Length: 317
Image 1 (tube, helix red, strand yellow):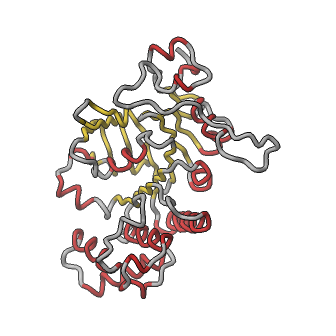
Image 2 (tube, one colour):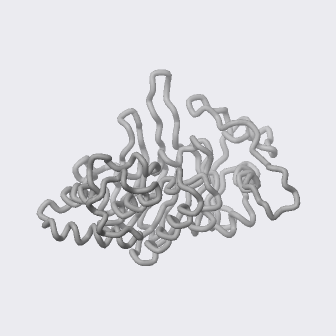
Image 3 (cartoon, helix red, strand yellow):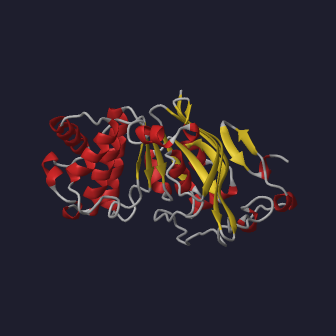
């Protein structure tokens, strides 16, 4: 059963020089206890998508479609109703642990602020108990509740951010680049924390990242985004072993591999398109080695092929 459903989602930012189409007609489901990875180059719309699910986009963003959490369309809720859902039913780990915590607030005060939004009558000793359990579940000594954020390393701050996100036991956790600015050892520790949380807390995780290696380790299914479009979606083993969309294939080929005899580093030529003025037809065609005439004229439809979703003219006109 899907706990989160995104249906025909469009997001555009209104700026002085026009509209920037950040997300175009994206649809997917997240099942209970599932880990879904969303990957793509910087600027492809994946973070905008994650932020839109919690309705935290800036005022110049226009959003249409449906975001269903347990059957409730979040886009139809007023601000107060949405405020009660954030943190309790769905939560988010933001990109930068160095700046996401208030430097003049102790760690315990971050938790208290969260609890009082959802349960104003909760007693202080109960708040400390829940906060201590949340910190302990991510490997942080509960005694450090009285510390300030600057007294923690980057990896420990990220653990505190995760603890804040899971304190009220949400059903869906969105992790937006949770290992940004962390060294590889700490990255592995954070990934292990998220894996353990899935097993013990009965939650679904949406992992937003550009790191294909992290997705391979963490996700059961992968959604590949390019220029605001969902171009491929499928099970991790199928997508990695036999990618269908040319962009997915080239993303995987761009991963450095020290085990291969051929050490030439591959890359995707060109740059992502300007989303304020995207190319006509398929947005990937200027960089695609398999471009046909129809790619330059018409945007391909999303098709279901071999239990996967793919958006490419290779799979039928």
